[in-house]
Amino acid sequence: MRPFDLIRPESLDEALKALALPGARAVAGGTNLVDLMKLSVEAPAALVDIRRLPLHEISLGADTVVMGALVANSAAAADPAIVLQAPAISEALLSGASGQIRNAATLGGNLLQRTRCGYFRAADWACGKREPGSGCAAATGINAGHAVLGTSPHCMAVHPSDLAVALLALDATVHLRSRDGARRIPLGDFYRLPADTPHIETALASGELVTAIEVPLTAPAKTSRYLKLRGRASYEFATASVAAAVLVEHGVVAEVAIALGGVGTVPWRDRAAEAQLVGRPLSAPSIEAFCDALLAGAVTTPANAYKLPLLRGAIHRALERSATS
Amino acid sequence: MTTSVTVTVNGSERRLAVDPRRTLLDLLREDLRLTGTKKGCDHGQCGACTVLVNGRRVLSCLSLAVMAEGADVTTIEGVGTPDALHPLQAAFIRHDAMQCGYCTSGQIMSALEVLADPEVTTREQIAEAMSGNLCRCGAYAGIVAAILDVKAHAPV
Ligand SMILES: Cc1cc2nc3c(=O)[nH]c(=O)nc-3n(C[C@H](O)[C@H](O)[C@H](O)COP(=O)(O)OP(=O)(O)OC[C@H]3O[C@@H](n4cnc5c(N)ncnc54)[C@H](O)[C@@H]3O)c2cc1C
Ligand code: FES
Ligand code: FES
Image (cartoon, rainbow over all chains, first blue to last red; front, side):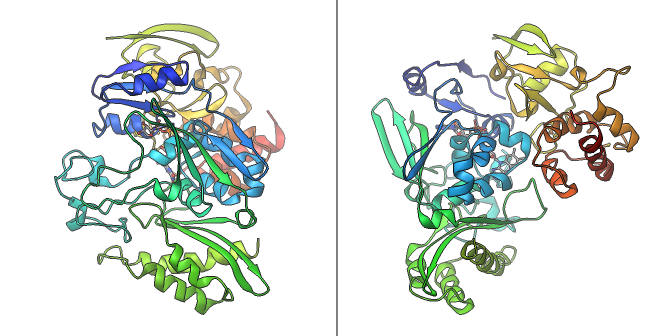
């Protein structure tokens, strides 16, 4: 691990000042950043331990819930308001990592965790995410776990977060704060496709902190479910996952949101494809038509093409679960 | 360059000068010579390094020592003694819940939180709650049985 300066701010203002230093990075639970620093994939010049900041609260409003960026994954997963009114969030969190990691991990850190692509995590391979312009070893390497949506010749690494997938389906908003002020950005606009700059992953500006995540508590959110498929039953990242929230009225779909994980370079959602489902019965043919539209742009390799039928099955199951919730 | 860190480990307050790069795991094993906590993968993937920080199980390999400033840390050395085993330690022996024993301290530290969770009662739920602790020897059946046994007979 490369040496770094340690800064332990007591207030948000102090933290934002420290984060404005060149090469400064926030550390929350450390479960992703410390790991990557050991691998020399990350080498911040200064580490700003943000855990003393007052961002540990979950506040329930009339029709939204605001979760502080430093809320532990395990705490959010067990929060009664989340469990009852946005169950996909709780299910997504509980499907991720292990009990130990969920206790240390924070919501903000989860959204900003880096990909698990093996070529990104090992400094001796070409990876444009790790070293801009160096190419993509996965394109011609072992890519059975890699993305089929949102890829570019420069990167096909999967975004690893389960939480982000649930939040995307629930139209969450990310609250950000820097020395220039506060702003809010829909989660759907937070992640950047790799294109030819795979090292730029989010809308987070340098020196900016995620302070909170806001989730509207709607009628479909109450029925939301998260289904995760993977190589082993637990303690494993998604091969394919689906967050689904559907409201069926008078036999037809009134509202629907479907987000995908484990298959995209960013958490994936296609509102135009969803619109095709609205007004139709939630039947096998209408779901298949939705999948056709959703997956029309998928690009597969011989090794990861299996993800498409896997996803279709997962979408059917997740919608069925949500519809019967 | 070192930074000062004060942590309470198994009830006694320790003040140390550490390299900010030191993990909590290395602080425990190398600086404090508490070698009951094991290093398996050093990357969060096995659970051998599980300890309690402020009463919650976490992985000491993914935590920097300086991040434990002011915290209360419990390691396997703070759980029972050879003469007065914790009920869970006794149950591990009764149920043959280990072979080489390398994962065992992590299993026990992790299981302490699972024991205290009233929602986790079935074999399946215990397996899920313990999934962050791998056992290369495959002693899982005994581990789950030991936890079930303590839950049923010696609530802690
Ligand atoms: C073995 C293993 C298995 C895992 N399995 C899963 C899984 O199945 N699903 C899943 O979703 N995740 C999984 N994870 C990832 C884990 O959930 C994340 O590591 C964790 O959520 C990150 O949170 P943290 O607080 O520890 O972040 P840190 O490691 O502290 O930070 C991660 C990144 O976020 C930045 N950051 C943190 N907080 C803020 C903030 N408030 N504002 C701005 N930047 C910030 C840091 O600078 C850093 O770049 C797994 C991790 C491991 C090690
Ligand atoms: S040594 Fe910490 S999880 Fe393996
Ligand atoms: S007893 Fe050998 S690894 Fe678990």
